Amino acid sequence: MYGKGIIKGALVTFKHFLETYWDDIRMMGKRYMSQEGVDYRSSKEVKGIFTVQYPEEKLIPPEEFRYIPFLVYDEGEDGAKNIRCTSCGICSKVCPPQCIWIEQTTDPNTGRPVPEPVEFYIDIDICMNCGYCAEYCPFDAIKMDHDYELASYDRTEAHIFDKERLMKPASYYASIRPENFAREEAIRIEKEEKKAAAERAKAERAKKKAEDE
Image (cartoon, rainbow, N blue to C red; front, side, top):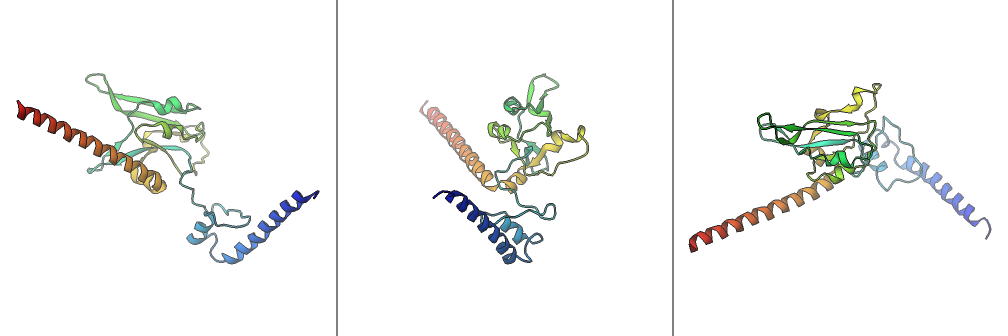
């Protein structure tokens, strides 16, 4: 029938229109100010057409949401920040807009490179939030953040993030990306167990060889 598609499209629009008001009535008193309302409006169950009343209401970013990268460090027993980055430079090489600059640490006595960055900079105005740096990092040292409220009136130094500003603990990464963190930890533990098993087997072979001799 001629015009059937137009009618179907209009019915879909009208359905969303009615569901908008039904959601408003059903969630009356829970929207905007309650965690229950925010959780609901962040879920796939939400109906109709809605406008987020930002900044009073902030929806929870999904786990795979990505914004500016940050550097992950493991917290030591003495409170030390054990940064995972080895300054290999892979992230800066794969970065499409070339917004990452790294200066590698060198041993003052030997002059040889040390697997740790002395300086690490990201220009957040240039960053396109593609996530290539996090995807290609072989040490899980750089990840994509959920913090998107970074606007400022300064267009120079405030938007050049240095190493200290980029560093965040592994516990923070686990809080914003729990599924990814659990998966990576499982892989890391499996690798460590395989390595330990290989070392034990090597030690047993060496012991057996010594006994035979």
